[in-house]
Image (cartoon, rainbow, N blue to C red; front, side, top):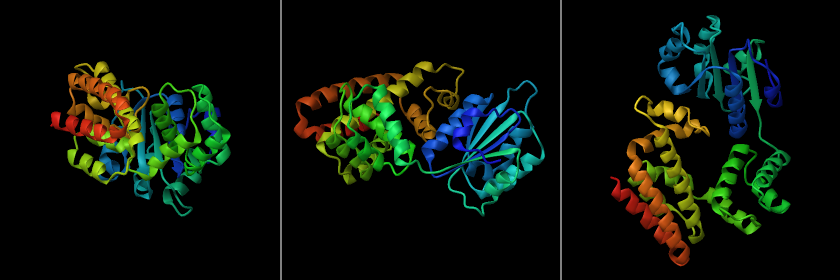
Length: 329
């Protein structure tokens, strides 16, 4: 059964167990899956299609060998394609009302076996997603800036949304970047948007921070050596590090002896995007709580020093990154 995106919040899916969300709008797909997770009751487990296709027994075990006392499960399988179709068909044939399966797929053409399987059945829910138009993206941006009481012109909003390629996920990533950059400021102009969104043509600052915090010193060096960051990017780089370091510290503070890292990361609020979960796990395995606390102190000291020496900001930032990497090998 085909469901339109705006209908997701209006429907109750008490009897439906299988959901296929597909299309090129990653941001919208993530929002839909978030709504489904909220509305469906059960413990959530995340997998990648490659895990299931290489070992189908893994999914069969989860679906058919459930303990009597075990709560309902919501199984989310990401990056799906026609490769998983036969496995899903086998599960559908042997009904299990205690399991909800959400498939997250990219673009599926009209010949797709998986898409056709869901479209032809009234018991299976399929939700296609398409690129957002400029009006939708502009509304999302306006609500964001109004919420944070940040002054911005319509021209600047138009520039921002035009650079997001019809994907609200990309837009929200840019908005988060802006929020880190402006800190306590209450306005942002078009020149600052140009500067920030130009970073999409550069190595991602998120990638630089994640690689460093994951102790991949070789990749960190490659990013720094091949980057074309500008001196004004220094503050944004440090604040991205600070945001990620604070999340790691917060995760450590929630951890106890009986909690696995996977469970800790899966249940973290706000939710960690599924693609980032293995990265965050590597970072937690690489840093102790004390070292993260010291890292946060060093980031704040570096930013204070950078503000007094803006002409050499990138040199200071890169020295900080190399020093951090060397201290924690």
